[in-house]
Image: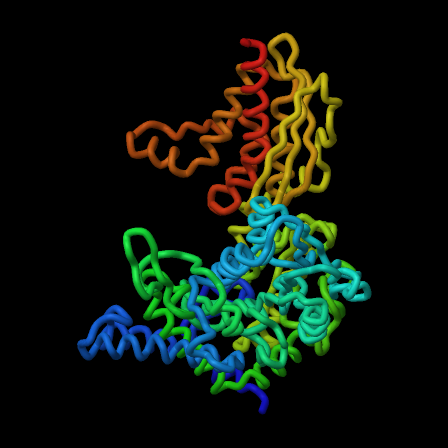
Length: 410
Length: 159
């Protein structure tokens, strides 16, 4: 069941690049993942053989395009365990737009002044700013679950925090700490309190087996490009009964049953939420990415990344000692492959600059989680994030570069 | 590693490890300006006192990478106590040194590059930054804050 990384790496053209005279060491999959040839080929093949607009034409290629777009929807929905993928998966631009859809449609229709929303201090801005924007208009009470010293959510007062809450919006896996949050536990408590649960799966869906029915959430947002697919496409899974009761998000072609000069009748979900020509080739690529992940196997991917995360955490401690801190929980069941580093005396920007000379791609900055940076007491971190195509050599090169940065700034 | 040494010259590392004029002047009477680099979350606070047509005192505070911190330190050393016209001249020189586009334009027109490194002393250590375009904003952060502060003071005294 172990991953044959050596063979699998050959599927990713970008991994054969040389930067600054060194083979590229790609450790930025939490920002965006690389694409296997199968994804690129599926999109090329679609444009070369099929391309037409969806849902309206009757000619052969138009019907094919519609079929390929809709079958990608089913492939993506099944991947996250959607009971009725053809109805419950809305294609969006990315996870950010999926979350904005929930806030702008469900939130606007179901929340009013004074209603309570429960968030966490580890949220990505994508699952925070839309709620702040809605609150500016409606006047909501925003509550936050705190992060403890090990980078886990403090759930000791969950039931108290849930009193009177209408919706809980929580990350399935932190893009800074790598923490995999106990969604089932949170969802059960939220439902008992009468709240629905919106999960940001941008980091979890690409790296763990995810089943919306096992998690018990009501909405799950995720992005194609973080899971080996192209940019420009993401997905929102939602419970059919919730989606059916939601007003449209964007207006335009493709989302209506009928239009008069003084009114319109919206289409059913998911078309109701997909105004305008959708990203068709991107959906085809997204579907191909999911098929690639399924062929490799999500259990195997998770096992590989978990092992590599443990290797990396040990390597940092053994070879860099007290100079380097990695935020987040220790290796284990609830730890994903995201390593946010702080290095004594070296700013993350400088770390990333030195690592670039080694061909190592990491990301310095606040990772769109400024409130969490304040909790951690830093202005920024340097983040190395793992993917199925990374191996121990990649981690070794990272450590080599970090040690060099330490020497340079000592 | 030739390129990295171009960026992280010894003078830069020295000013990063032992920054000059670090801290905040009491404001008021000093004029205070904050600068942000949204790219990396860096923040700089520049406090300055102008007296008798001179930049009598200046300090900088905040957090940032070696480039932003050393640039602020080098700036404060270069401009402290200087007449304002000289300070403005240094700001112009520094900004054109950080502007690849402007330097390229000057070359095309057959004019000499606008920066005479002999006149800017230690500041020349920051020249290597232009080879790393992502880092230019780090280097110019404190200079923009100084420039903004001087403009605000001039506008206030004119008004």
